[in-house]
Amino acid sequence: MTGCVIVTIGLSLTKVGLTDLAGGVGAEDFGSIQNLLLGGGVLVSVVLISIVNNKVIRSSAIFIGLMLGLIAAILMGRIDFSLVSDAPIFTLPVPFKFGFGFDWQAFIPIAFMYVITSIETSGDLTATSMISGEPIKGPLYEKRIKGGVLGDGVNSLIAAVFNTFPVTTFSQNNGVIQMTGIASRYVGFYVGAILFTMGLFPILGAIFTQLPKPVVGGVTLLMFATVATAGIRILSTVNFTHRNILIIATSLGLSMGVAFVPDVFAQAPQLFRNIFGSAVTMSGIVAITLDMILPKNYGVEFDTVEQHLDDGLKPLRQKAS
Image 1 (tube, helix red, strand yellow):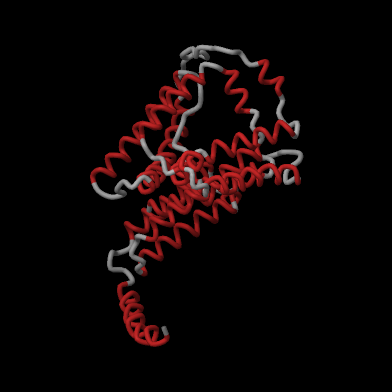
Image 2 (cartoon, helix red, strand yellow; image 1 turned 60 degrees about the vertical axis):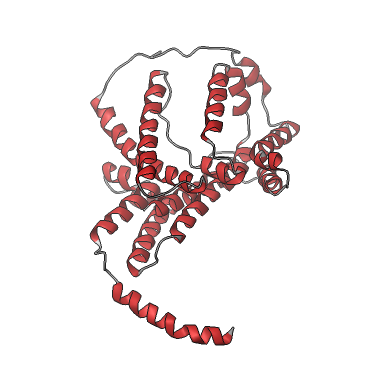
């Protein structure tokens, strides 16, 4: 299940990365040569920096790529410095600035969406474990998943107190780990402290929000794709029996279909669209359901025939080689 979910996350998000690279949703100059050159240049620079022998430079490929893109955007006149100057230098967040209330009509769909994002979080954390060299089965793995989902909930609680949207795991962080080779949680602690401090200075946030969509897309496209490769690596460890192939094919087929044709459930009830309109949720639910429904020995006769055929062809392959 986790392999299918991670592959779905990565492949479905590549559309987001490529859309940003071309200029972003609704951009008047979407797909322009300027956007493609800017985003493509950032993508190429990250790839080239990632193969440099120097470990420090290689691990900084994403940051360097973003900075090169920012410089190029400034030279192209695509940065509006007036928005930066209008931002306050320092501010303190005020808890419940807009008041506090509770609405069952709003609570039920939001709670349901949290269940859906928990499936995605489990997939992200599994990819993180695998890329970091941690187990993806057993008690330690299950403890990490439970802690990660709980952390997601606590983070969203804190976010609500300080007047912002709920938060969830970001798949592209797995791409960062895979590209930089840095998976230490202590680095996460330090970066978290830096981001918390920067959050007190809105002027710094205003600078980073000026990054053009093509610059961001050039980086995220590569990171999303590495997430998909992590899922493929997990699937490569699966015993490809007839049963497992059927589960994987059905899960990926339906989830990618939803990702590529998002209007497929346009006429379905809203509740159904909330559940199965997400490619990630579709992938997880289908994989789990089939794994529960299909007998464990399903397709054994097909696997036996295939094994006999393979064994019979081995001498011919050896003779040919």
